[in-house]
Image (cartoon, rainbow, N blue to C red; front, side, top):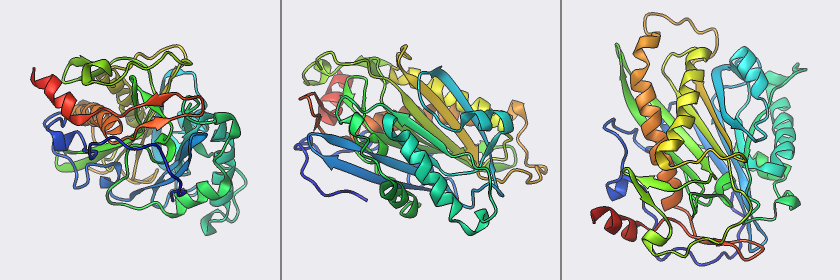
Length: 354
């Protein structure tokens, strides 16, 4: 759901994803939509709040089919730097279990979002007798381009994101939890990507979604790219900006320990894109499987020495998702006059050709 309101003029270019520009990462094929939703049974929804120049914020819902306290999914979590408010992580770390959708939002809205998620879950028929629930909510600080102290994300916004979550193509850039985020000197937002992964005896799908909001210097195909390099003004120094949420999903038969290994590599992948992992950056990865906990592993279970294709897939998909988050965003000006521009495709391609 998007709250209609005028916004600063978008980049004159029609946003194009990295792969459309010939900047896809790695050799593995993508799923049909090159998105987290290519993993069967995973849906994504956004509520976008735009009231310029004061508010550029929102919430993004990642909804695995059937997830709940009675049917948890195996999951793992990794914090490269724990300067953040990723709610629900201790139970994931302890039990390896995900029992709610995963929501992403703005830092100071995280607690309201968690409360709304609990209310939404308790209304499910399967939760009629639940007396304990672990909501999982991640966040990034969008305070440069939005009035973060107003805490604009409300219960109805959370419910809209959950109730409208769908499969298929996923909106990227300045939508949902990425509406007010910035990364690597550019306007960023939500990015997503997927890979089809050959495993012994089967093919698996891995998908990722990033909420990009971190410092550093962008790297594309190994080359550093600053705003000035592509004809944009150099951003004025602002408050320390940090954090990135990475969510990965797969239908491969992995246990929680293996998913934790996958989550760890999803955050490592940010270094490829130029992440600085600064003091004030909360850099987190969550990885979950779509096979409910307790499902017999069977002969298709992936041994540890067979995980390398999935590790390659998550590294490549996250790097590409970060690029997509920068390429598909819109120029945005915040309440104090700070402006961030998306990564412009034509100047970028020209720079890479030199």
